[in-house]
Length: 383
Image 1 (cartoon, rainbow, N blue to C red):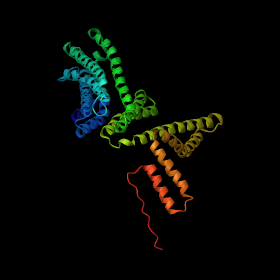
Image 2: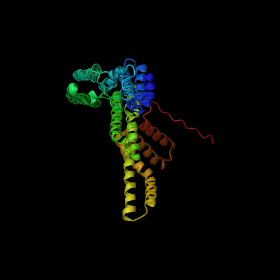
Image 3: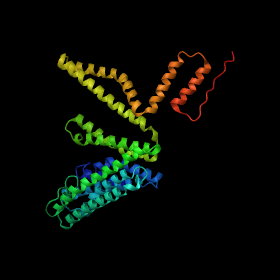
Image 4: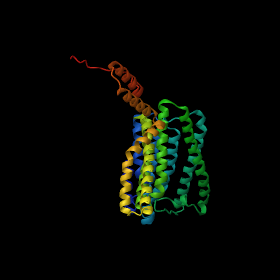
């Protein structure tokens, strides 16, 4: 896998497109590969680690093969050796997508949520197998017929834009993708149902998966349309959106390995809180700029400076209020702990009896932190 990643970079440079067919693999493969390796190493009995390694292997293989196909069939006119092998291996993205979807269905322990989901598993495997076999048949037909045409990313045109004798593949893809999507939705629905019925560690694991999936989906929806925008600001936003896709493998790694598993509530509350704060402050900033420039007639430079100072001044009070509201909904344990500490601080101001303070302290700490053992040591004043 590492060797294929290392080969993809010089091949991309040689075909004048460093991120042509290997761009996706260069971004996603290292993170998913590390996750698969760690899970397979630490939890060898968990099928997810091996599924992720297989998916990343096919993804990287597809990227390297696509880059070589571009170099051979678009720049060297088929003069390089073993170009047909690259064409045959380039559709490796098909089994990679199938394995990634299977990983979602079998999350987090490599087993189905229940026996009733066997029909969904077999239906998904059948559809995925037919799709993969179809890509191989089309690629082999193009090689045998000596009619190999690839686009700038190394994809075989007969697969992406089937015509002539390969026109049937367009109909097959038109049926396969909706069925594949239904199977994916069914697997996600199975995880949601499992989340509602679960408790303890499994519930926290599914929280990590749902949270990471939501961030990754939002990042993908933001990144795909804006990553190639001519506007620099939109391009930066698109790049950040694509980077957010990595939240999915990271959240899966935390959930499977149970590393800081119970921090999900705090992370969700912080994510939601800062998203709300950012939206509010951007709205205030834009509103003040429009008010100062369009209504009051101030110069744009002074309007921008004043609006920036106002947004900075509002940050701390807005953050406190929003965080309190969000914690009450998404991080109840922290909210209750803060409430207990605040109430104790209020009672402490008027307390004069040391024994009463000690008893109140023990009660407040027990309510806020829920420790297994608790003791207080008081130094006696010998004077």
